[in-house]
Image (tube, rainbow, N blue to C red; front, side):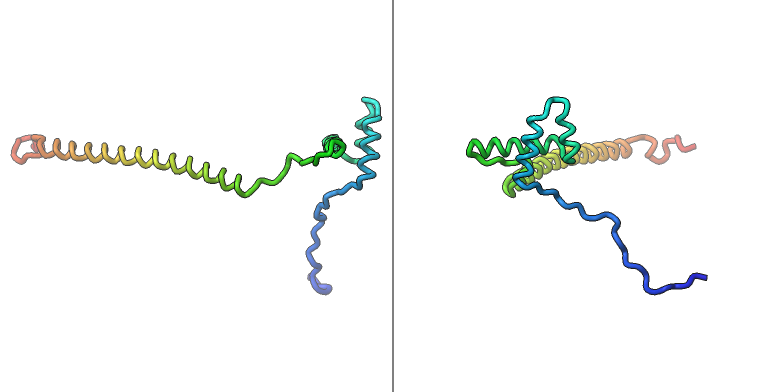
Length: 139
């Protein structure tokens, strides 16, 4: 038999929520100088030792160069403005509206053709000799 030994254990999430790493300016400057001074074959050793990627070092270099030039460095991953999102949505909705109008016109044309075909078949069936009683074909 199973015996309960107290209240059930609370659910524990084994994965911690990741925390974005931040780097102080002195650390960035030191690693960037060391990376740029390293000979060609040992640059990756600096990256592995510090646990960072080359793209991060390149981003630090761009920020440093922009600061030296007196401008501000803006990352490529800037959030979209609400206006551009709304404009993109409007363009998408207009394209969908045009597509639906074309489909509606095609469906209406098909229904018109089917209606005419139905009327033609009714006329043919009314005037056919087999539908008239006493023609002698029902034997």
